[in-house]
Image: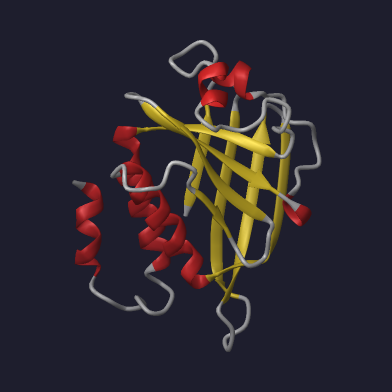
Length: 181
């Protein structure tokens, strides 16, 4: 469904879904995996509703199309995961993925916003001045730069996964072609 990588700090985040938790509910079974070097964390549970997959895809599409408000954050009913727009440049968009409650990683992530993006166009002071995260508030948030050319593929994967859930279940997937162009 969603894979994000921070190449500089060797951090990978994977979110996948294996179906509804219960047939009569909208909650899906979500698997989260975070790895850094030899450290691995995984957790499964019903933390998102089926429509939340579409909310993530729409949020990313809004960032890609420069239609999101400047402080574009995405939170869900169960506050285990959140998405934050940190900064944008001509090369990429930096997002933060906040992991809370049951999704808090059980090993210390070796990263900071300054270290992760300090050697490129993303200087920490500029991010702070533009309303980004406080430099000391990164312990339970992972940072990823999504390059502009990667957005269509990421959005397409989310929508493909979302197409197995109502209201888009069993529909012709032609509407997804826009995401690949």
